[in-house]
Image (cartoon, rainbow, N blue to C red; front, side, top):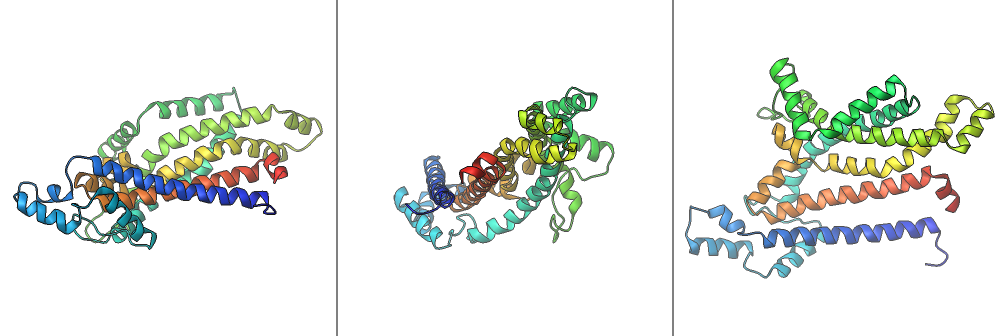
Length: 321
């Protein structure tokens, strides 16, 4: 790869690593489902058919083939854009995943749009006022949220806003013929639940970065040189504080955009998590693989983007490239 710019070589290596990660993730998920007791035929006909009928359905679904044959068959078709069909109802996996992914992506995107500016803004605000009353209030609030599990926060939100005040629905199940896109009130409690812990973690991380950057020699020299405070914050403090937070923020975004089991299950939200639970219970391997591949792809993509953004924000990295 001589003669290829360093940044391009790094991008090619990262892309190759991403492909390897997706292959490894799909193999691991398939192996896990294959080792689980029972299969889709048994789950589908349990209590309603004898061994002969189950054996016939197992043959029709291809479940009597060796596991490695089934995995390679799935992988070959997946590489050509075909994720197979659901063992449970014969629906194309791509159609099922697309329907549920839209709901999860909406929930995750709304949360992410709030998480990024609030996380950076509150962290910057508290860090610039380290030791003052405002910083102590923010620190206490974030510490409280970090110490509470999501299901506890979600339950408290339901008790307050749904049961106590009656402002919001306790469950996020759309009416017949409707979707979360047309009923935005269904998103409020799941978004607040998802936002709670992730916001607290990122605020604390950015705050620590701001405090460290504010005491650096570059910032002290700029202030002694009479540089306006807003320029000091935007030019030195904010980039230095955001760089270490970017990879963590990317992981939270992947977590949000991939769908979250706790929030979606707690509120009955029709997203990827509910589909994954149902598919796992029915041993519906193609659906499990399709959802896992989508979540893994989102995670890898966001982490690659985070690495690139962190490199661009890091002055040392920019000089190296």
